Length: 269
Image (cartoon, rainbow, N blue to C red; front, side, top):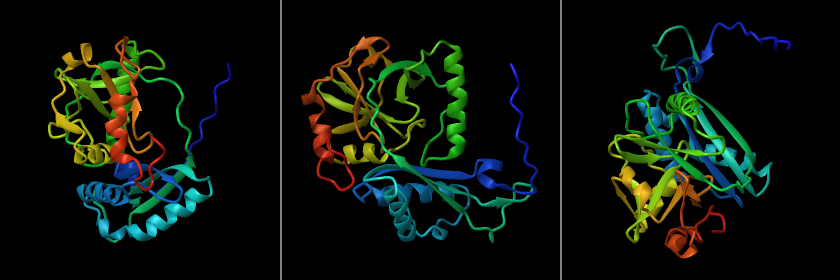
């Protein structure tokens, strides 16, 4: 088998997102020219930039919103968009120049709902937990390493890892978790670390239909239903966890849908 020739680039400077993981991002859908929770996305992005010492005021949210809508329009009326903000060009060394402005990348593609069922397989998070106040590329580098560990442990292709730590459930790799137990919906508490406070998750908490709580792994054996939430799927039911079938009864999910229905930028639920 012929080896592929490596492409080698010789450079004097790298984007700081590539050099040091100094980058934050937000992912969401643009539906009929609207984004659900845009201000919340920008608030979370600002928290991430502030953590790196980047002046979040350099990102004009109104201008960025216009650019996002313009890019999305080229791909249709229901578009998945990722906005990534990096630290900009980096010389050698950790010290950043305050004269360097951050750089913004907008990626967009037509949104396609996944038709396959979601089957969760519980997996232990192999690293120490950290509080996740924003979406940082360095966090997802750890997730990629964890995925490699889980695949070596036998994670089946097509199964979605249900991330656990110390006897509690946390989330999946790309979505918040909801668990229906004893007549109510719960989501793992973000205060202990390892859980990102998602935009859809926060809307459901504010709507009073979900409660943030410790979600012990023992619930895996007797909960009635599970769902995953993010700003791409919004809400999707889980078909099974560790091989045990879960309920997809519409009436269980109706309170979740009701909070979001009719909001700008939300798909038909």
